[in-house]
Image (cartoon, rainbow, N blue to C red; front, side, top):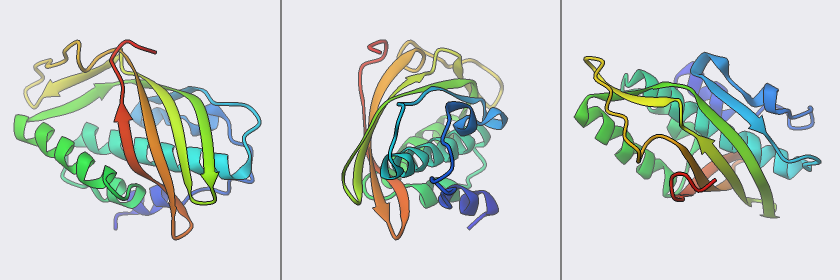
Amino acid sequence: MSQQASESAASPSVREEVTAEGLSDPSIDITVSLIPEDLGEPEKGALVGYLNAEKATRRAFRTMDGDLSGIEATTTGEAWPAYQDQYNEYADSGQHESGSVGVDVLDVKVFDDSTSIVKVCLDQSKSIHLTSTGEDMTTDRTQGRVPVLYSVTLVDGVWKVSAFETGVMGSC
C-alpha cells in the first residue's frame, strides 16, 4: 500500500474539531464549503471516511498513474469495483481530470454503529476532463452541480465508502 493510501485510510481522530476548511485539500483542488453543524462522533467519522475516499479518487483521476491503492483503501463493497470501472473508462479514453471541485455536505446520518449515509452536492462546474494531449472533453454531463448519496460503512474501525448514487446534474 502506498504512503498516500495508508494516510487516506487512517482517519484522524474525530474527537478533534471537524471543519470545512480542515477537510479541504488545496493540493488536489477540493474545497469543502459546507458541513452540518453539531455532528456527533459517529457522524464525524463517517464524514471523514467519505472525504478520504473523495480525495483518494480525485488524486487518482488527476494523475491517472495506475495507482488505485488510495481508492482501494477508502472504499469497500460495490463502490470499489464501480470506481475501478470508472477509472478504466478514463484510462481507455486517455482522459484525466483537472480543475477544482467543491463539496457541500448537506447531511450525515448514522443508522447504527457501522452504517451511514452522507448526502453531498458536488460542484464540478470548474472541473474539466482532458485528454493526454490537452484536448478538453468536458460535457454538460460532467460539469455542474450534482447531488450524490454515499453509503459509508465502518470496516475494521475505518469508515469507508461502500456505495454511491449520483443524482441529476444541475439539481442541487
